[in-house]
Amino acid sequence: MIYLYALCPNSTETNNLPEGIGTAQVEVLTVGTLGAVIERDVDIAQIQKDDAQLMAAVLAHDRILSHLFTYSPLLPLRFGTQFSNSEAVTTFLKTQGETYRQKLSHLQDRAEYLVKLIPQPLDLPAIASDLKGREYFLAKKQRLQDHTAALNQQADELQTFLTDLATQDIPLVRSAPQDHEERLHVLLSRDTDTTEQVIMTWQEQLPNWQVVCSEPLPPYHFAA
Image (cartoon, rainbow, N blue to C red; front, side):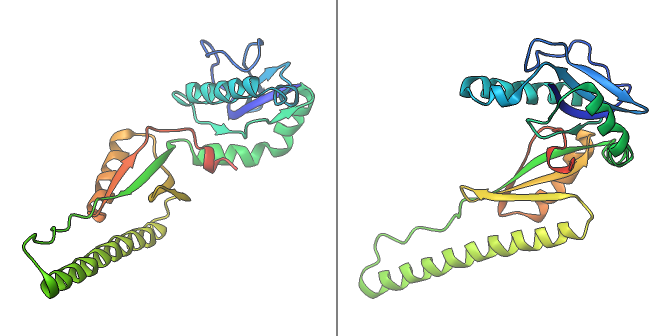
């Protein structure tokens, strides 16, 4: 079986690559200007029968992609992509080549970033300790109203930001929130200085959120 990691330009070098899933050398099989990063004699179906082997294979898959992406445009393929032999890979490259060449061209100078939007803690004043009876009740009621208003402001701020983002032609995949964090997979410049400026602008638009950006990643969510 032939395991496929990614598609890339045919000029991509595979020297000094980290260890792959199996024992064979990771290589690039090319058709025209398009290449497929492959490893021979890897049977994922067999590996999936053992949890430890499966985890090691997943880590190796990501390790290879991360290494290649440091110096080459890349179209990551889903973990587990394999073909029966090299002729099947060649046929795949010939029949789908033009589509993938266009995608590689589109991604040439871009990278995926995971952007986390973390709501800032609400800083509401404490209820005065000397309040009693009705005054305490009214102060508690007011604090609850202020808390609700602050939450609504955060939500409105986020919705306005996402609406504006949709008009800017920035490729975006929104994941399910985790622990109240919003998670966005966005396609931005591979140049980290340029992307940092974008993130700073977003932070200014979201004063009640903390904007945290990952390092440049292979375009996992934008290769399909």
